[in-house]
Length: 155
Image (tube, rainbow, N blue to C red; front, side, top):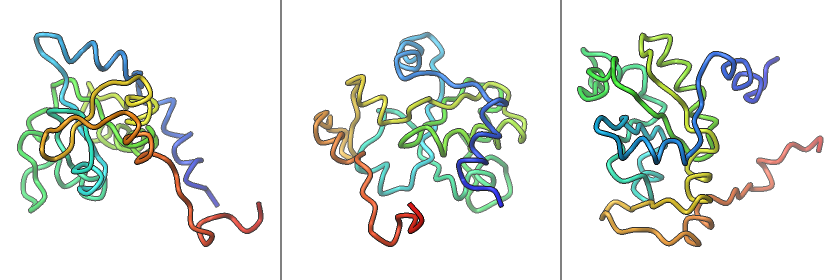
C-alpha cells in the first residue's frame, strides 16, 4: 500500500520546483508567470499571493480543458506560459504540477515550501479584500492543527 508521501516522492523527480524568492523575482519580469493557487476556496480567500488564480486541486484536471463546467479559460490557454503552482506547503502543488505536465503543460513548476515558505520569507499575502495580511497572522493560519482522530494511533 502506498502512502500519500510515497505518491509525492514518486512525482518529485519528474517536476521542477522553485523557492519562493525565485518566484518573487519572476513576478517583476516583463512576462511574469501565472501563479496557480490550488488550495480550497476558503483557504484562498483567507490569504493568497496577489494576482494569483485559484483553481482547487479537486477540479484541476477538468479546469485545464474546454468542455467542462469547471473549465477555466485562462488556465486552458496557459499551456505555453510559465506557471507556478502553489499550495500551503508544496505537497499538493507537487502532485498538481506532475498532473499538469502529463496534460501537456511544459512550463509548470511547483513552489517548494508553499505559501508557508513564502510567508517565512516575509513576502506579501493578501486576503479576498486585497488587504495585506500581517506575517504573524499568516504564521498562525499555516500552523498545522491535528485533531486526535487524525493522528496515527501507531505513533
